[in-house]
Amino acid sequence: MSSFTRTSLRIVLDQDIPGAAEIFSALGTIIAVPGHEIDAHVVKNADVLIVRSITKVDETLLEGSSVGFVGTATAGTDHLDIGFLSASGIEWASAPGANAESVVEYVMASIAVIARRRATGWQGKTLGIIGCGHVGERLATRAEAAGMRVLRNDPPRADKEDGGAFMDLYRMLPLCDIVSLHVPLDRSSSHPTVYLMDLKAFGLVRSGAWVIQSSRGGTMDEHRAVQARRSGHLGALVLDVFEGEPQPDPVSVDTADLATGHIAGYSRDAKRNGLLMIRDAVMRYLKSGQTRCPAEDSLIGVLTRPLDQDGRPMGIDHPSWLDRVLRQVIDIPSDDARFRAVVASPDPVRGFHTYRAGYPARYSWSRYAAWSGATAEETTLLEALGFRPFT
Image 1: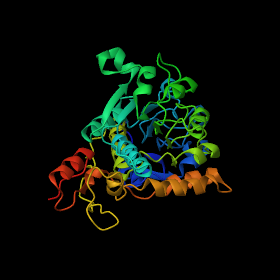
Image 2 (image 1 turned 90 degrees about the vertical axis):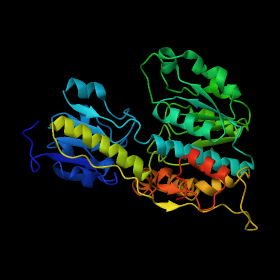
Image 3 (image 1 turned 180 degrees about the vertical axis):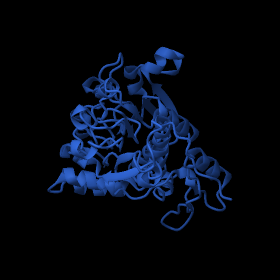
Image 4 (image 1 turned 180 degrees about the horizontal axis):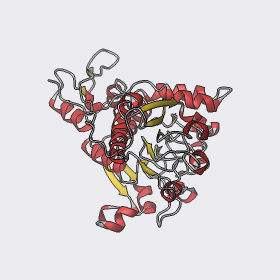
């Protein structure tokens, strides 16, 4: 690949990936196109294609093109026809783990919102995590540090590691106050995940439990989830991914306590991390010795101490304390309100794409510091959640 030059390499990329043009412009000529408009005509003369999950990359898109490398700035790869890419000699790369912290933060913030709405604490609750990979294991660590009990379900890891660290799904579900899914959409392995959460699973979920779905549409039977929530069997339902994307079922959205449009992993830091991973993969493909772009870790801001209605500092045991803290850095109820308007609009598909492309800037919690004068107890918890101490 050393025959490529800065002016000859043609890179088609999704224009709605923040920072992509800046990061890849040093490698070649950029052709930036909305992800849902990337088609066979657009990629015909491209050498490199950079996408996210909105673009289906398969024979229909690439047959007859000059594309030799495909990169997706996402952890998931179900939008890539990997069999076709491999058979065609097209190299590819994804970004596993790049958005893990962002998804963990979304889940913790969702728990905080529901806890406030239910006027209950989060510490001491049992969190069942289905899928303990990049995201699930980080969530387990964060939740345990924040005072939750964690149960893990991950059959592929149980097969390879100490099986005692993991529980059978059907044994775990009745024990959980909260259940969070973090599995890929897998149809063909020895542990398929299609409709992993099905009628039987929802029947075993503890009455009143909260279920959070931020993995992949199709890993949960939304119809059964809606039934369980409407019957009152589930105490709360949070949906960030949908089987019908980019046209989610309005009934699922209407039923969910929180509904957002596949943005759990959408922090700016997650996107940049993913892009840097793909840029490194492109450089390996090109056998380039160019200098890597550094990750950003500068301080964005300082948190404000949460106060009650009388202006007095809240204790960390207050049901609204966590939500008041986290709403300063991630406002899921606002994301939810915008998404519901999109789904109810005359053109929900276009609205879905616009919602994701125009998602407000959000940064990793590690870019924020605790407030001055935070107590030792507050500082310990805030650091466990991923914030910096005040300096």
